[in-house]
Length: 79
Image (cartoon, rainbow, N blue to C red; front, side, top):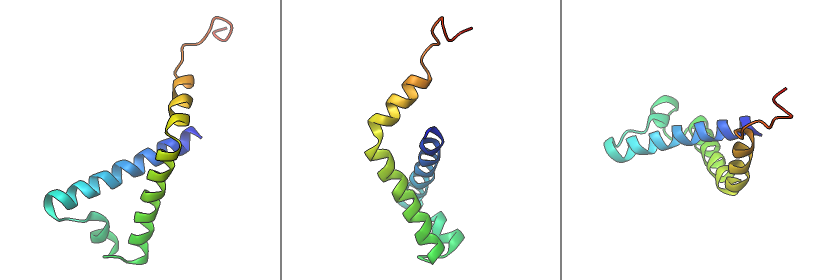
């Protein structure tokens, strides 16, 4: 699941940067690359939206998984 967490986070960064460019410069990179509202652009937008939904619904579970994986090893597991 941690890989899915990372993929979702990367997609959200990409989506956030795209929206930042739209707001700051009226430049939509996804539309520029794939065509305005082309099937591929719509797919990109939907995948980013699904990543956001995943992150929102799994927020506490993601925090717990990352906290557990970053915990210091105990003496028994350090051998």
